[in-house]
Structure formats: C-alpha cells, structure tokens
Length: 583
Image (tube, rainbow, N blue to C red; front, side, top):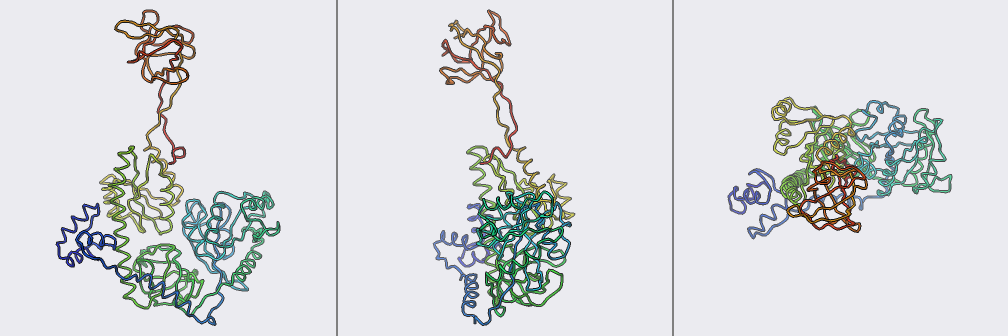
C-alpha cells in the first residue's frame, strides 16, 4: 500500500506518517509502497485493527499442489533426469560437460571459471539428459547449493591426478543436504600422474565408497580430453534415472525453478528456467516472487525459439516485469489480477525490508558497535551482470567479516553502474564494485567529480583479493613487544626528592631510558610503565649494557624490593592480516 493511500484511509496527513517513519529510521516518500509489517506497526500506534491481505502466494502454491494430487496417474510420463556437474575449479568439470554436449564454451570463460549457471539438454540414443553446469570455485557456494536443489543426480568430478580437494567436500555436503544421489567421474584418467586407487581411497574416507570396493557409490574413470569412459558415464546416468523413477505430468500448468536471471539491454529481463512439472507454453502468465508477466518468447539452449517446454526442459523466457531471483520457484497462473496483486505485495515487502536494513543497520548497529569497540566498516555498492554472480560475491565478501572490520553492502543489483548508484555511494561513503558490467557515461563523470572509486572485475577471485587488501588497510595495527633487556634488583635506596632507586645489574640485553618497563616479582608483573631515571654512579646515562651495574628509578612507582626484575621492551606496530583476526 502506498503511504499516501494509507494516510487517506486512516484520515491523517501524509507528512505525519512520514515523520512517524523517520522516527523509526525508515525514510519513505509520499508515493512509497509500504510492506505489511510497517503498515501493521503504524496502525497499532493509531489503535486501528489491521487486516492482513489474503495470502495469494500460498493459494497459488496450494492450487498447483492440489492439481497434482488430483491428476490422473495415466497422464504421468517419464521425464529426463536433471544432472548437475560439481567439483573443484581445476578438475575439468566444464571441459567434461563441454565434451558431452559437443560445443566449445570452456575456453571462452575468464580465468577458467564458469561465471554463470548454464542449462543444456543433451540427446542420447536411449533418452535425453538435462545438465546444469554450476561453477566450481569456492566463492560460488550459493550457486552450487541452488544447483543441487534443482537436480536429480550430481556428477562429482574429481581429477584422478589431484584427488579430493576442499571444494570437492563442499560439493558433497550440498548434494547430501539436498538428498541427491552422487555419481563420481574420475577425470583426467589419461594422465601419467593419475592414481585412481588413491582417489578412491580418499573418497571412501569421506563416505563415498566405490561399488568395486564394496560400497554404493558409482565411480567412472573418464577423460574430457580423449572421451574415454564418457559413454559409460552417460549410460550410468540414464540407469540411475530409471532407478529414481522420475515422473511428471506434461498436461498440467507448469511450475519450476529459476536457474538464472539477468537484464539484457536489448531484451529486458531474461530468466533461464527449468520446468519441473507441467508444460510451459508461449503466452502463459508466469509468477515468480515479485515478478510476473506473460511469456513473450522462449529460447532453448541452441538459441532456437520454441513454443512449449515440457518437464525437465531448460529455456530462457522473456516477458517478466523484472529480474527474478535465481533459485525461486515459478508458477503458471491463469489469473493475471492475482499475479499483479501478489507482485505488488512482494515489491512492498522487499522495499520495506531494504529500507529497514539499509537504515537500521547503518544507524543502530553501526553506532552501537562503534561505542563498544570502534568497529570499522568498509561500505560497498555492488553491481553485476546476473543475479547469481551478485549472490556469490556477496557471500564471499560477508565471509571476510572480522570482529575488527565489517563489510557493509549498501546496495546490490543487476545492471550497469548508473548515476543513481554513484549518488548512493556518495552519501554512504562506499566503494563501487562492478562485475562484468559497464559504467554509464553520466556515472563516470559524476564519480570523477565526487572522487568516488569504481572498480570493474571480470573474475570474482580478483575482486575478493582487492577487498581483502582494503580491509587489511583499515585494520588498526597491533602492538608487538620486542624484548630489550632485563636487570636484577640487588639493593633498594630511598633518596630525598628522587624517591626509590633500585641498584641493579643488567643480566641480559641492555637497559635504556626509552621503552616500556615491567617490574616482575615472583614471576608476576606488578608494574607497567616507564623508566623515570637511569644512572651510572652519579651520572645520568642513556643506556647500560649487559653485566654492568646501574641505578634505575621507575616513573611514579616506589614499591621496589630486592630480588625484583626490571624488564624493558620496545613496542612495534605490526599490520594485522584478516586470516589471523577472524571473529
């Protein structure tokens, strides 16, 4: 509901509501849409009963599920399996998939890392398989998790010459969390350094004991270079699909999952979707989160326009009102009014959530932390070419948080960097980071004028490394004590005006007038301060060497006893690194 509409309904001026929201650290305009939670809070203050709008989203989900429960089982048909390739970044995951679908995409990606999740349908002699190619780099954990949730079988690619790596274990955890069966492809088996038995032993240690070792895990030696074992792998995938008895009803209205969303300059919002049940038709009304629209075009993985997409079919669709979130479900609905209403409600909720998070975290949490211990923040405004890349970078950045330095993502969105982004960076004192995007001409001029830093990257790893360097520059250096010398107190003298003088002998190193002095008694430090005076006989001296006797006065401290030790340290400031300061 817009702020002005709410004000009219309860009979007060819009400005009064705006002031109420400002008191809550929520800043809204007269035409601003307000989410359910904010409306509820405002109405409570005016003692007005709040009636929540009907849960249209739940109704739509329920409608699809009831439709599937009532379906005629005769209409169920076997659907192709959806297979996800996972594995370490250098183990040849994309090259293996590239060999299977007989196209060349692996060497087109920067840094050897597949930047976005791709979906491909491969026709085989005895059926077809849909492959999802999830990125294998550690920074893409969120993408990999979505891939596992949308798939039927995971192919875990492990290099036979390298073995199990951290990303390998990570992929296994995601597959297990999604209860998805795992087939292991031992890639690079053609290399001289390949040691298949060693890798099988490593797999057994993490709960993937191979079938030929008495376990239950299907393990296939393959080579993405020569093609060895690939046909056998495909046969085993179809066999695994038969065991899973994958069924769907192509007659029903379609539902599925968003694989990727991006904003195309020529086509507008584009969503790659995977149909999980039913058939998606050209002209269908689709709802996904806060986005909806009629399907104006469907394009398959070969770039061909098609009119319908049956179960397990991946397609890119045009016609949505905005860029949907990867991993969200989509539903075909017959009622455009319902779709539009829910879309507006979702937009209000997301807008109010962004307002709360951007204001409250900055004004409340930040100042609270500042009072507690001078916590510092590095503000970042993030723009990317697709939603999946943005989520991956966000997760990697937030993983860098320490108790000393916090990452604050002031804004993250799909699209080129524009003037609005620069203005937001100005008021939030943020660095602007872009991933595979361009900078509008107006934004470049404004950034140069206001001295706003813009960093553009093509590889996520480089972006993360730059942020690490920036955060380490923000960390206060820690103080390191460097031992200088130690003296033993042999006698204690009381001198008028001068106070207590300790007659000492330097046992180790040297004693100077500069540094931090510690008085140690019975192995406990009883004083930390400075040396107030240092004498050799009656002369003031700057330094006394090892083995030499001297007189030492401690600054503002007279409680010195025979047998005490006086130790001297120099304090050196050392730059702190993030890897040693994690919270």
